[in-house]
Length: 317
Image (cartoon, rainbow, N blue to C red):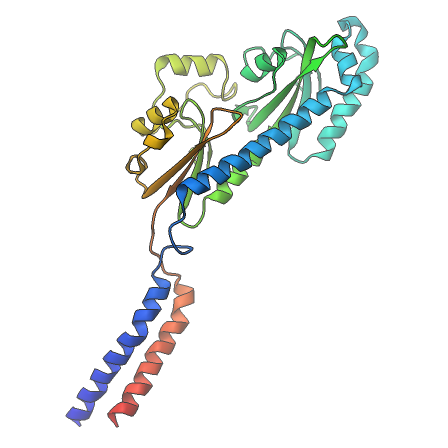
């Protein structure tokens, strides 16, 4: 009997190990297979965000070219009342047709709101870079900005009169979730995707606890003063908080993306890609993490134990 028990346990251990080794190889692997290429992921994300910005800017420019809006913007302030209804219907129809569109408004040459689908008429937007650039005849889009308790982006296009001169600007306020979603989607399979601007501030963060509108490293006093005065991140942002990734922030601000060190982020690999339209950078950090899905491994483990017991008993007989 002792010999039978010894043979049984020896057979059981050998068979169990032979069963568990391939089982472990299958389950103890990095999430979603091999570690993804961080550089390729960052490039794909940048291309997707560039397409998004281009689409929205083209759309804003197209609406800004509507005759009713051009006539309203170019009219004398006293004569605008008779043109307001048609222009207002045009921009309201746009808002009604787009679930991401929060508000559309027009500003005059001084940056003051002259027509809006929202509530804040006569608001002055002259400190904002998107308003300045649009009134200089350029298309522009803002960083996600916190205003009136909501984070939004502002897409701006110039409105031209019949002589080709800038008569005002059209601004579309879009929910920031539209920018955040591609970054969130890219954060899977052990990867974390970020979008940072030229100041090193996180415009989008795909982490489980995102640090939105937080800089990688503390801004200088001059930078803090400038972004607050220009309302770069909205009227409600009076101080940009920071983490302590100083070297990474310096490399991004210098445009030295190839010099980024994964160790600066506590990652295994880091990929980075600058967008085409804005000096914003996508970052993808990958970290090999070995994890087991207990629900998926429980049944195979029970089967392996049962099979080893039966086989060992038969061999020991």
